[in-house]
Length: 245
Image (cartoon, rainbow, N blue to C red; front, side, top):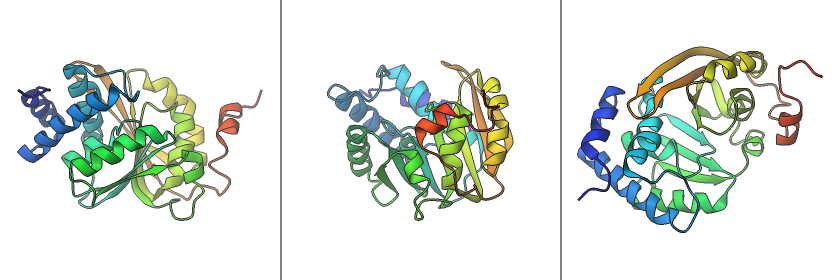
């Protein structure tokens, strides 16, 4: 008996415009089993019930595909991937993509590495143990990715400073946010502009078991100035684009 309701996952994915074939569904089932198993030893997530995994991990990750058109073979970075979200579900649904799952917590990346190998995604996904603000100043990573994705890591203003430096000009930063996204968007507008971005769309999506989700789509229209990203302590102390106290 399957651990998660694969029929439900397939239906929710179809509502998002994502077609999951049998191989993808089998991989989602295997990933769910790995997640629960590893979570008994390593704190990956508080959500381990079958319905929570379907909606709050898998379907929520796939909302990215409902908000942006991702071309065949595109490269992405998942900033603050944690237990592999949204990056692993995106690769399971679209194994033609190439993804880097970045996180500063080594134990979580051990799990993500294990999942990538077990799911047969080794040619398309890899992990990177690094802080986002450190990655953003690396020549080999800065301005490299077609897409940067992030879910529930920080407020949109700070998140933009972590993600836009890694996104190539002409590329897209996609932030997966909850119901109260508008306040974050208002606070982030000036910072996004400074960082070379422009809000292109805010896609409202309603997931049956989660309510409203807001997917903020930011186009990288010009290079991020070299002084960004700053150190995380400075980002927290001096919010970009906000009047100084």
